[in-house]
Length: 252
Ligand code: COA
Image (cartoon, rainbow, N blue to C red; front, side, top):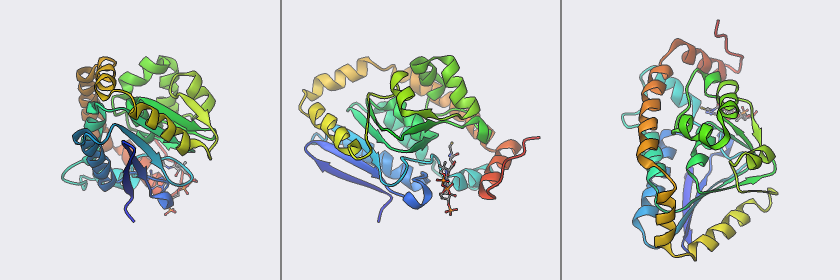
């Protein structure tokens, strides 16, 4: 079965991440499928809302660390689909909803900053341990996260990698609602169906007015240059080796 599936019903394109044995870690191919889904949503008048959800215990363990390790050795793919995925996220004119259970790491959290409604299960934990991996924030999160939750909270998330639980995420403006795990996907769909009934033109215009896309893309470019260089650093190679060898990294 494909690791990213889509289903269109009632004007809602539901995009499901499904690689539970690897905690829904995202590969280049999966980013490609996510980018395709966003393009499909943009191109089809039938799609009025897109919902991201995931199967399994956690929403996503973030980027596949084996693929990061390969990229750090310059053995990555010719086309980095993550960049297409992120650009499509920023450019999306239709409302994006995310339904998140369990841990959501790295891009699993930073993608939420581009969603218009975020529903969390009670056990959700948002983590952005970029510095622990000797990396830097991506997806324009270095701009959007401090704007959303303030510098000191954002810095703690990025530099210490401490998890933010669902109640704090709600209080800090990272989510709309916290529900039980059983209610999660139903609640996201209820929101999506309500939005799908609204006039699509006004929804898109309102969304467009709320985001400075140019500024967000510019910051993403800046991050991307620093991220790519840092990915190839000795400290990042040590972080990836440590993960593969199931040991603590030694940055000394
Ligand atoms: N990339 C590749 N594989 C990953 C992964 C990732 N980001 N996250 C988890 N996996 C794999 C593990 O290697 C393991 O594979 P194995 O069964 O072949 O050994 C499997 O998924 C289960 O992971 P495990 O660590 O045993 O699960 P857990 O429930 O104890 O912990 C996490 C889950 C998400 C907390 C932990 O896996 C983790 O910290 N992952 C890395 C997250 C990360 O740093 N992502 C990058 C952010 S920029």
